[in-house]
Amino acid sequence: MATHIHNTMATGRRKTSVARVILKPGTGKFQVNRKALETYFPVDTMRSEIMSPFIATETAGKYDVVANVNGGGLSGQAGAVRLGISRALVEINAELKPKLRAQDLMTRDPRMVERKKYGQKKARKRFQFSKR
Image (tube, rainbow, N blue to C red; front, side):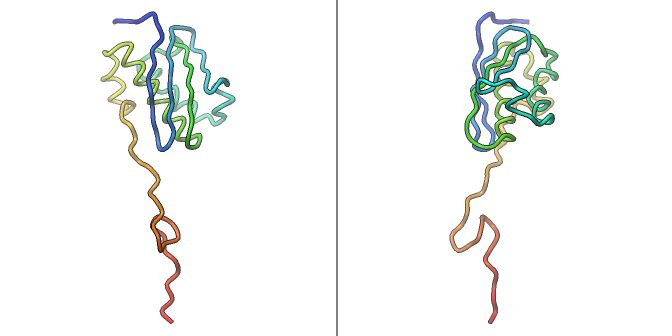
């Protein structure tokens, strides 16, 4: 198992959110946009989603995480941080990739909001049709 002593940086994206994640060897401290993880992501499911790469690779508490996230909402930002952590873990140790891939943590979710079309109310919803 090859481990690096220096910081590892990776980028994660989801919807319109972009996360720059830095992993340092440490005790498991989280900092997202200069705030604690519990403060920035108050919903428990989002925090567990972010922790899933560490749980899948059994590396929880071995790295400190510093993440800068912008764009989108909290759900997209949580997904972006998760992908960034997964990519950084693979950069540290390439042997972890099959474990992360098996739990679908290495895949960038391509789903984006569909654009609004002209002559319609929203992307697919149309204005009410009147026959007379």
